[in-house]
Image (cartoon, rainbow, N blue to C red; front, side):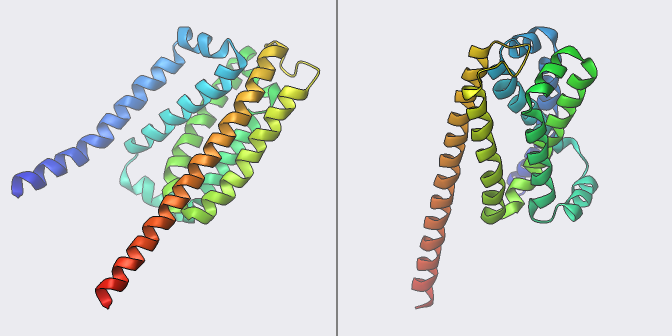
Length: 211
């Protein structure tokens, strides 16, 4: 039993270390000019590959923060509301076509974009688990329709909204945004259904025990 407890303790210590190392490696890879140029070469990879990977880096890097930082952040992030609001604001700003153009031309904007995505990833990880289904639903109910609206705008616009990308690439991104929003909504609804089934099973088991 002592050996089992010590192995669990060591695993708990290693988990933040491995996540921090993974965040460092992934961040260096994303900042390396070759993969960065590949991702930013097309509009859909720029937004739907690079953005999520930077957010994943931020989520992994959260493990490197000391416990007192997590405790301090929890005080202003009750029920995950503040963090999810921040994520929504970051995503709304970074979906603006002008931001994509500026990020490709201005290194300062590129750095700000990456920093904002790191923050969004860390905030999403810190907030999602404590948010609960109601707050999660409110967050997705704002972000996913925004993705659909932006995607439809990219599809229907007769003009190039980004000077750096062709109109066909713009329409392809729009279709991807609509599709990804639909998939995310479906996955979350499946999670809700699973949670409700588990709750009903737990209630039934408790009723049989008490009777």
